[in-house]
Length: 248
Image (cartoon, rainbow, N blue to C red; front, side, top):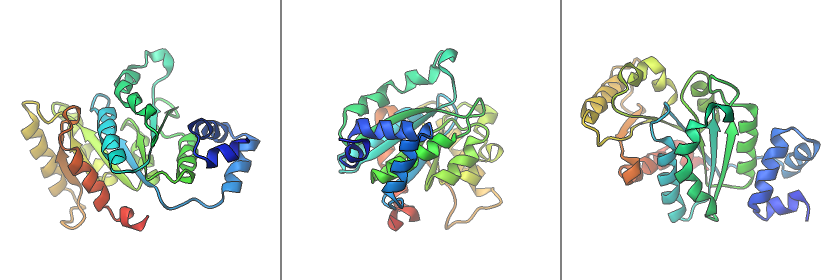
C-alpha cells in the first residue's frame, strides 16, 4: 500500500511520514498534497502560547482528554524552540502529553522552531495542512510566547490562548507583551498559588484598560489549575463559543 492510501486510511505512521515529506519538501510530499486537493474546513486550529513553565503542555493534555471524551479527534503540534543540545528542558514538560500518543483519536508531533526567537517554521504550516487533510476536529499548536511566534500564531490559528502564571512580575504585563493583540483568551494557570487573586485582577484590568477594549469582543480572562483539571471545561467552552467553531 502506498503512502497516500495509508494516509487516507488514517494510519498514524503515514500521517507522520507525510509530515516529514512535506517538511523536507520532497517530490512525493508535494505530489500527495496536490492530489489531496483543497483543504477541508472541518478543523479548528487552536494556538496555545506563553512563557516557559506556564503549564501549557499540561493544559493541552487536559483539553485533549476532554475533547476525545466527547468523540473529537485531535492533532497536536508541539513547537520546541530549544535544540536537543540545550538539555531539552521543555521535553520534560511533555512527558504527560506523550501519554496521549496511545489514544486512537490523537496524533502528536514535536517540531523544531526557526531559531532562538521561537518563530514558527514553514514546516509547522505544512504540518497543519496535513492534519487538516486528516479532518481532525481540533489542531492544537503549542509555542513558547517569545519574539515572532506571538504574531505568527495569530496568523495560523483560529483561536489563540495565552497561558501565564502568578508571580512573573513585569513579564505578566499583558499589554507589554502585546498579548491583547493576538489572544482570544488569557488563562492564568496555577491559580491555586497565594498571589493568584492579585495576578487575575491585574490581567482583567489590563484588558479593560486596553485601547481596543470592546465589551462585545474583548479578550476573556480565566483562571485554571491544569494539573488538577480545574477550569478546563470553561476553557473548552470558550473555544467552542468562538465564531470559527460555527463556521466549520
